[in-house]
Image (cartoon, rainbow, N blue to C red; front, side):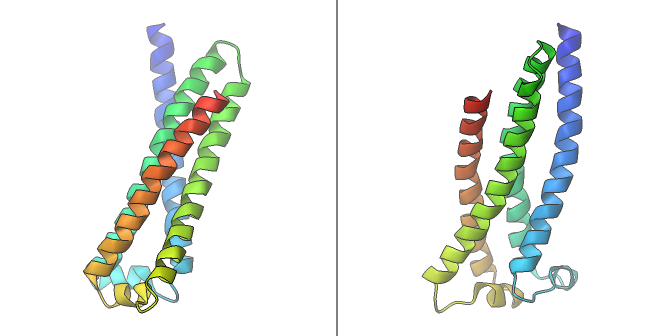
Length: 160
């Protein structure tokens, strides 16, 4: 059984690395599309700390959701080794769904924040380097991810 656990751990690590890279790429790409004409890479090269804070919070938020989904993959692999091959498929679908839900929820939360702070153009402030606005947005992003993370864990429990 120790060899099976080592195998599961290795598979889990490989899947985690692949999905982490893909999820971070998708998260950065989606964020780039919603920032209203801001060139994030250019802002980072200029040393804009506000942009760095927002991008870091998006990466952290996605990592929280992916981490909870990877735990479900471990359960799916163990069940697959016991003969229930659909469990691994269900766990992968659950993880992908979790990533999509996290990105969608973060996008929705930022839109709601934008409506609540009508007098503030958050992305323009971030472009100017406003760290206070970046920290507020980072709080919304990470808080949303923490809430979504518990939902992903709930989906895992239901599917597996």
